[in-house]
Image (tube, rainbow, N blue to C red):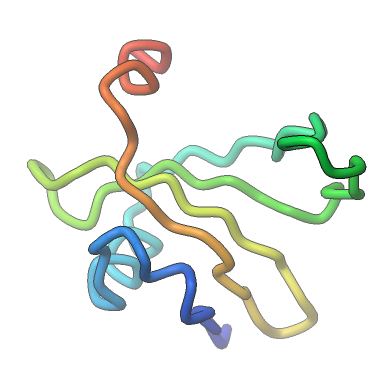
Length: 91
């Protein structure tokens, strides 16, 4: 499967290699994307978005990855390290 990473997905100091290694990790957790509107803009459909929580190496940072599955391709639209508060909520 082809993986496309958008430029703005790399804005939090995460490298392409970290994303690719994290997506190979069999311990990733797949969650439905939130359907809540963000900010003051209108709500938009996010039904096809998928969130992954994964690590690129055993002691590496826990990454929050948002992707859109497309036919034959996975488009990565957002990636950032998880905050301490988020980590506590997933324990």
